[in-house]
Amino acid sequence: MHIMEGMLPGLWPLFWYMVSLPVVVYGVIRIKKITEEHPESKPLLAVSGAFVFVLSSLKMPSFTGSCSHPTGNGLAAVLFGPAVASVLAAIVLLFQALLLAHGGISTLGANIFSMGIVGPLCAWLIYKGIQQMGWSPSLGIFLAAAAGDLLTYVTTATQLALAFPLPTFTASFTNFMTIFAVTQIPLAIGEGLLTVVIFEYIMKLRPDILEKLNVIGPKIKESVKAVA
Amino acid sequence: MFENTLDNYAHSNNLRDANVNFKVLFAIMTLIVSLISTSPVIPLIITILMSYLIIFPAKIPWKFYLKFLSIPFIFGFLTFVYMSFFFGTGPDIFNSGIFNLSVTVDGFNTGLLVFARMMGGFTCMAFLALTTPMTELFSVLESFKIPKIIIELAMMMYRYIFLFIDEGINMYHAQQTRLGYHNLRSSYKSMGMLASNLFIRTWIKGEQAYISMESRGYNGSLYIHNYQNSIETKNLVLLLCFEALLVLGVYLSGNFSVF
Image (tube, rainbow over all chains, first blue to last red; front, side, top):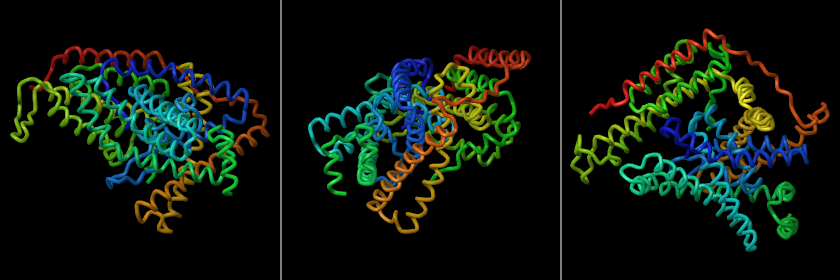
């Protein structure tokens, strides 16, 4: 869920820009290092960013009958790591604002924080944790995508409650949580399922890409080959 | 499924040849004034002014523009209604009698202010999005000292977005003719196939792009043609006067409220 242009009052846009900037700068430094070591990764990063944009403009079938757009940040974080995903998300959010009018320029910082930093970071941590425990990558990707999606909404609710603490922060936080987070639980589960389907197809058709990105370990690689 | 993007209009409107820096400065300064305003008056004036600029001088079809404006309008209106019911502590204006729900003075004022700011901000952004092509915005971003690698990535992404949308639409239609979306289960399967195939195709495209770039002498950085020209002093003075007028309006209407 994007925060619309003009919704954040006063100095809040500036504040969220300041919060998001260090992470994005760190991501830029990482990307610079990666592209200097492997020049071929630059076009690959660019097409992956374009893929995230197209993915986020797909209409996802959802349980409630309405349609929603997947955020795609869980998948991006698992594939490229949270730092690189935050830079890709920042560019994608700028394009969404200027090409589709989702989100806005003044709220870009806040949207980067929720969709490009908190969501991907949590998704990545969950995926890595489940990988460490040796559970199946499909379960990991489901939980990562669903949690990344849901936490994005929780962050949005928090940001709006901070901007409008009326009458008190907690009261407004509960209000925004009901609208933005509780109603989004089915959508988060939907995105989790969709990401699992996407991930399993990629694993079946081109496991070498996932290997190259260090997403799946050598153990799973063997079982994938055995299936093929 | 994939709505027509604003890009077509950005390339073919009557304000396309106006100075890029001027347009960016104008949109962003007006946006900031709209954000700092403490009364709904100035943001609503900005909304009307920007809509006038978009429909008349830029000659964007008004039907398209109104349809486009309906998204923030509906969203903003819902926010307004919601805030006026739940975000107040002051005296009641209107009591619905059901569940003790009532509209309070400060709830109403906050809601109206947020609605006005959203419309004002949105029209400023729409002005920029509808009159300025992305490629020209990149050259402005470059002068903001955004790292070159980001601009290169953004330019390449911009180019591939349209290719992938076309490919996605083709796949979607192919799946649809084969009843790929006839129920929820098959929708998930088809959507997953579409997205994963798109990812694999994008990956192949990226590898091919690198090979073809390298064979044409790519050494790790792209050279961007910079077509900026500076703003005329007269226009700059006019712009600053206009923004000063708006700020004065914000100051004068500071304590305005309907109730």
